[in-house]
Image (cartoon, rainbow, N blue to C red; front, side, top):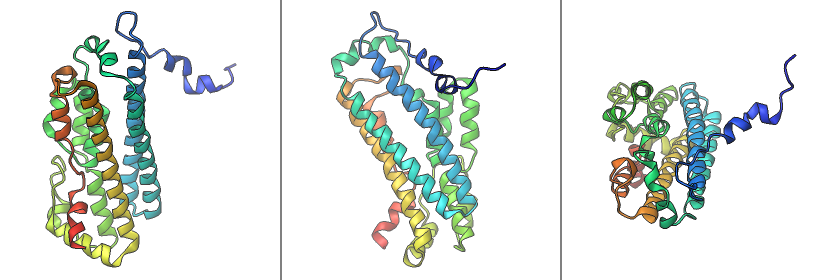
Length: 259
């Protein structure tokens, strides 16, 4: 007879709490915080992928109400992961340096799930997959060749009767989303006469801004902790992170001065 399901067995709490294994001697007190914060980030990245995939399905199904609800949930998650930076910033540079050398080549740059989030949002960089092990490369290659959330949004516009240019609908989805004057003309028309669809545009803009807020806070947290030193794993640290402060949906930003 199987045991009754409990809170602990359902959530696999014992297994979860066994996953924090500091590498430093002692170990250093603050390494536990560092591990837990980043493990929680990975859990939230998993949920973001779950929700953003669903948002793409809803856009392709022309389900406006549920799209808005799902993006609202994503925005709430983003606020949560931004707030986690406040916790991480309670660790001073000296406290981080007490165990930093034990991280060896480990780096946040190696978060495959966050690269998947970027690809799903439309920030495609074909060469980035080469920095990962073979099994991860396959996952990233799959994401690279899938349409992004923006591509799903363009299909949503078509379903609502808007004439999206063929070159935008049939673009190479392995490349980053680029500005399109033809799409911008359609979006301006949407804003001027369609409150329901323009509301979805605004939620996507909120999403873009929320992602940029996370990136910006992450940049400042890293700068506060290590200054302009090179990042773990050999990355350029703050310099690299600043280079990623880009919008995911450039057409939605470009039209603001034309409305």
